[in-house]
Image 1 (tube, rainbow, N blue to C red):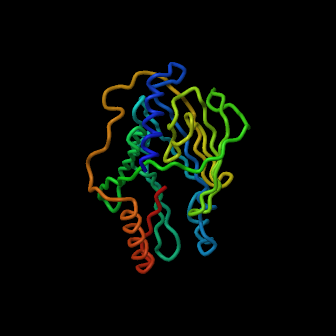
Image 2 (image 1 turned 135 degrees about the horizontal axis):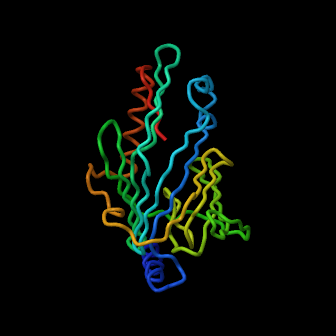
Image 3 (image 1 turned 180 degrees about the horizontal axis):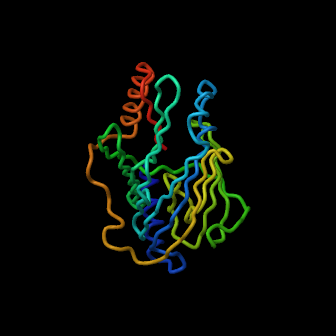
Length: 243
């Protein structure tokens, strides 16, 4: 942990010293999730009750020291009634993710059952493998990196640019030597792609660490969700799916 913090602190210092890296701005991403592919074989029948894709837009506000990733627009909730009185509701997550690399700090604001939680954890260093493949994303030359998530059984491919500061990216994909502009999980199961990059001074209030909510660890939050999902399965009534 000490080595991780030292590495992150060193990179954060380099960010402030290097004029070659863009230091501040906003990146707008489109997040497209294949809902049908995310279903288990036991839930194949649900395909008739939900759309194939769920699409949303997220914004990443960043400065030399920190970043904040959150939903860009307040999209309407979609509801579909299925057979047997089951109601499928799809709503894009209304959370925020704040990262401060120099302190290996990660704070996620999440809502669950109408209550806000501050999920606190250390910034994770993902086991990326850097390769020589290149392409252009949102007008920026990018290099490829990839890794396999053993826990979730996901193949993750990312495209990052060295024209912006390192340790910058959407969601938890912020541990590469540049800004991550595209992420493809399991060949299209979930794709996060930059639509627009706006390099500019941030406005007051655009990048603020979330502070309101019950403090909890990632492990505790996952246990809370598992508990609720089990209750929902037993009741067999309304089910809420949130991306």
